[in-house]
Length: 429
Image 1: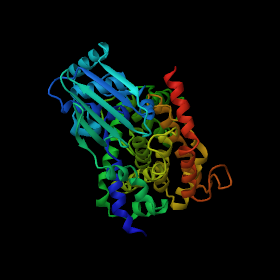
Image 2: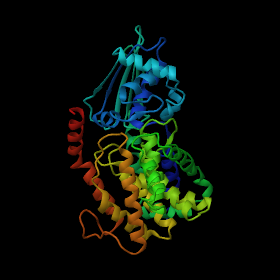
Image 3: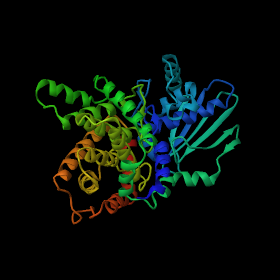
Image 4: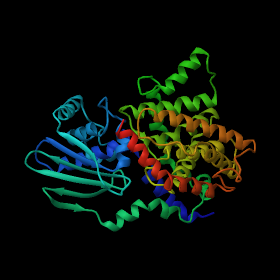
């Protein structure tokens, strides 16, 4: 048992599993705008934002909390006018209707401009805010809250040390360089429970978001649709329906701007939801005690981070799929499986849903979240019966770690061109 990895595992989860209000890409732009405004004396009257293609893709069609609108321009405007920089990914938590009206006025008067930056960074936002006298520019890169520079009137007042920036962006790879999926399994089962109690907050936040989504006021109403059809008698209740209903409802609310934070995973609220809610539903179904539920949630979240660590932070591969592979670990264990069955379930999911594209953040992400959760339930039940996609099929290997690397090679390789084509289609619609 590699106990020397445990401290690093805990630190990684605390860094990668954090509350976020709104989709993390537009929120990152809002944060940069808020920090820039903090360095001005007057009220913002001009905002220019330039973002990486991937950030543009994930910000074009997603709801911005509390605004009733989608897109990066409103995120930049409301962030500049009323954002709270110290709240980081919850930067918009205290905006008011008056703030939103002011932000909309800025958009109507063409005071906000958003464009694509020619950068190699997957995640990049450069936001310049002017008050008519002075201007401040903030650059966030390689992490949703990672400020690399602040300039006021062309003079740098903050430049991040380049060495830590590089190591932070590679941090998951460093932590997992000597770790395996089995190490994560052993950690989740044996770490002192008090050391991982903090993970229960993911249950509290994402379940509250799910309940909000079930009101049927958000997005494509996928969770509410499942519920309505159970009530009509067209669907039966039960474990699968509950997993789909409650997981997709949280994403419904999340993607349509609900003013409730999600507990994110690897910089994504949907990935946090996908890693949390299926496990929560199975734990409740089995009447698991609090400690067992906490261990299952830790197994899910850490496995999701481990899988994602092999991939670019943003890619053409839908992150809900890989986060659900974390969830299948927690679910399979709760249902009585051990590492052999967990490995089988993850491998089956890689053989099933690899290749679902990410075409930006928007309400239909909830459909991909529900599809991924459904695949997780299917793979878990198959594994418990000793059935799996074998190593002789497609990109799946005999062992789980090689299968994960094969999937990630696809995401980081050929699917980078897919990403270019997706963005080209989106911006020319």
